[in-house]
Amino acid sequence: MAERAPVAFLLGDVLRLRRAHPCGGDTWLVDRLGADIGLRCRTCARRVLLERPVLERRMIEFVERGDLALRAALAPRPPDVRPS
Image (cartoon, rainbow, N blue to C red; front, side, top):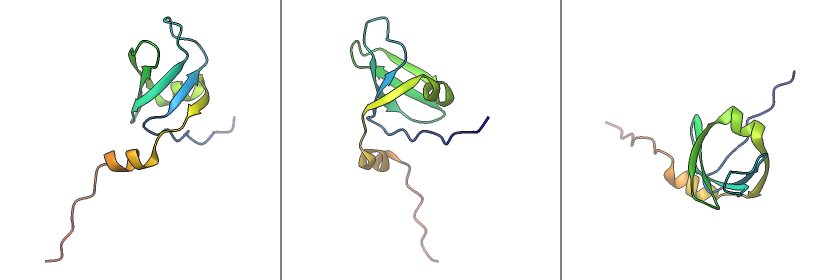
């Protein structure tokens, strides 16, 4: 089986997953990135964590894309290197 490239998620992305949430909502907001992806239901505001591979399998489509500038602003900055 050929491996697929990982999906590039951004903070603020809105996703549609294969199954609806028990509240009836089917769109989720990405609010945490890392090994686990934090999602918030757009209907009831319930928060869940999914492993990246699980989320990639369950995702159908991007409803909206997040802001690349927001992701860059929240990324850790490298330490200042000053010549001695």
